[in-house]
Length: 254
Length: 298
Image (cartoon, rainbow over all chains, first blue to last red; front, top):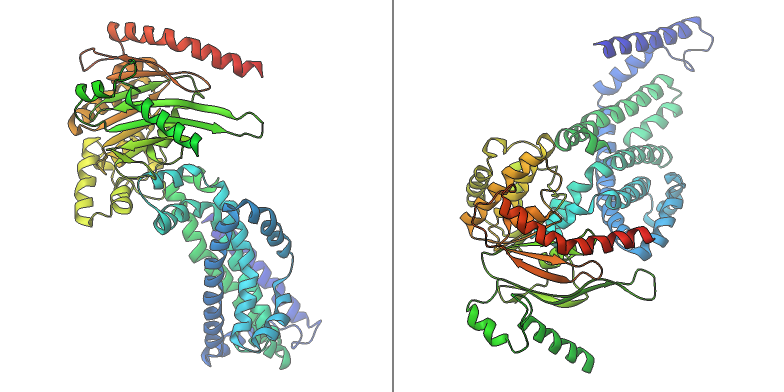
């Protein structure tokens, strides 16, 4: 209750300042819209289904791209963690590649895949693959060795050992990386969609600019933040809470 | 080539008169006479060397020969760092020795298997699974048993270790003694021929440990499995074992073996147990002193 109270006061004040600034008319409304205009834009967008379609398309790309980078990243991370040569060579390269903003892969993706869905997916994958890989690699190494030994001792081998022991055992160590990977993928997707016009939320944002419709621009930005917040709350915080319940708080957050 | 041949001949000879008691050569036949059944566990000429960066390799284990009959309870004592845990890991198949072989039921150990289960010192219970799922793990992923059969056996073994009410709990919710029991149930549920225990009760308080000694002894009598129990506590070894093996420190060898013929059930406080333990401890003391000397010389 206390937390909710704080939130109401904070966001109420924020909204108040916004309305006040809009009322003062320092800037014309098409540059600085008021909350009512943004709400109207949101309502219009949802009632003509253009927002829903854009969200659907963006989320599908996210699921595909992020899913792909989780699978690839885990495999790659495990490989790097289990091989001294790869750890010394590829490990360093991965860390330095992480400083490259993922949108830099777009020109390359367009040349390789053309103006297609694949190009966008490629950018999303490149955006999140590295952080998943690096967290899997460190997770694999931080994970106590005893779990792998206990699993083998009880007769689990190969893929069974991976899916039923190594993966769940490393989850507390990689969940932060998975979350970060999702955030990176989301950013990469929106920037990709903005530059490379092909439906989705990013394009909606650019359309707002092209039409000089600032209300729509802000409405879409609100949507992007809201979706990020909801996924974080629904998916990742649920996972984290479940991990803490199972492992006990100290071990899961260690 | 010749060397390898010579080595294998040597280890074959060693295993012949390796363990039960120290006899002169030619005892292959006499052992066969004495025990017509083949040994459950046979450790033949095991050695373990680490290179460790230096030119002369560190020899952790050397010339370990053991024969353990079905249903025997064998305890191994030795100073810390003598390689007793390593030996257990080798029997479990988690680790390959530099030299020598381990045979279980006359089959050479190449990998881990559910015919022998190790209970680790740190237990290695899976925190992401419930107690029941932990107990089920080996039956599900090691033996591939059917669900109905698994469920029945989980219930059976949880009851055996007095944890019938805790199947749905998670490991972090249990006390140390309860976790120990889960590990025991998880190991026993696959019905292993050989139970390997690596200082399992070292971290427990005295009362809990006493209780678990009694329970382990009952379970051992009930299931008839073979137990190899590693500990640094000599009294514990005498309390539980039919035989107590004393290991030397670096290189780890089997120095002596004691047959404990006291009637069961024994207790840690029994004067006979204390007396036998004192004998063994005298033997062990030299090794402990040696290990301390080396430790502090550095």
